[in-house]
Image 1: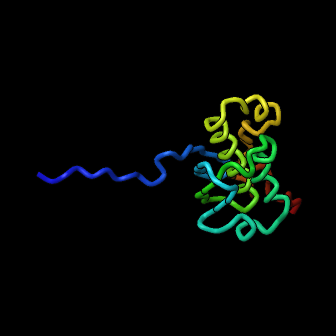
Image 2: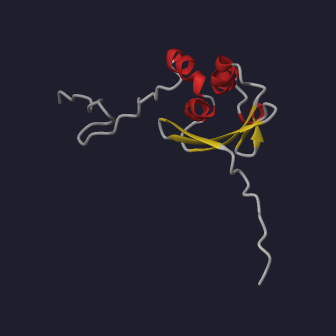
Length: 139
């Protein structure tokens, strides 16, 4: 009989959170660390060039004061850059709520746990878009 070996599962201690915005979906993993943020295997500064989008991603960590305590690994797809940044923000907030139970009030008061439900309105038949009709022709 072979000896039983114990193999540590990679990411077994990670805290998971999912964030969505428009058509973007972000799967966030939080683990104790030194404050590194990786998005789709790239550093935060390399993935988001705009300061506003970087601040959206960092909002939860700065609000709770845990910026230097946790490493964040994100897999995000769909939508545009701004939608992805907001999806990551929600995913980090949901994971942080599980990571530290005492920060839920701070996150709730800051509005970081609320999903932004605004989506693109679908096109309707007989119209040129969601609401715009065709131009009226007198003759």
